[in-house]
Image 1: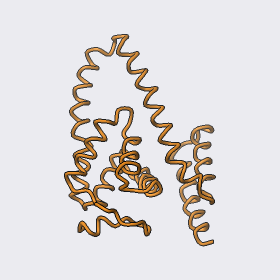
Image 2: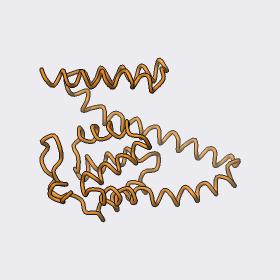
Image 3: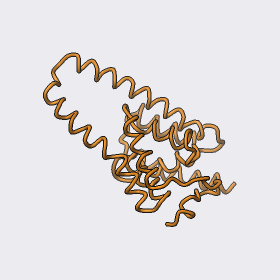
Image 4: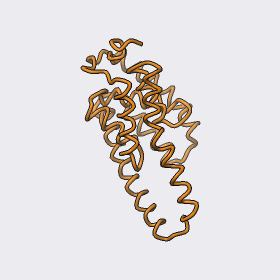
Length: 195
């Protein structure tokens, strides 16, 4: 993929003023992982949509939705999809490497320390506090990602609420809910777009 083609977002969105280089992809994802305590999704969205403006809020939601259905960790999938979109397969490798190098070594060190000190009460309290902060970050990101869906007319808000209710409240199996609601959502979006 050429850099000029890589700088053209889909869906008629305006072209990027500057498609990130391989080094910029690597450093951006390295920065996300260094900043991303509590989960990297909030930091990724913030960088791509709010800071660098590499994607619109709707584009981010669309790409993230695709990555939800691919096997593997969603945000790692997003890393590869975004890097590939910007610079082809070498961009995917640059983004993926930047995203995974630091956490790989950090988790090895954390695993060694946790194995030795997991029974220390102070560490358990620290981990409890980190879990609360991580949950807050996730809730804030969900609100930001849901805003474009709920500002549009159409079936998207209803499908989002039905999915959340079926999985979160009714505790129905994730695979069964997605097997039913994903095709329904696609048909409704197709039907709504043709109106």
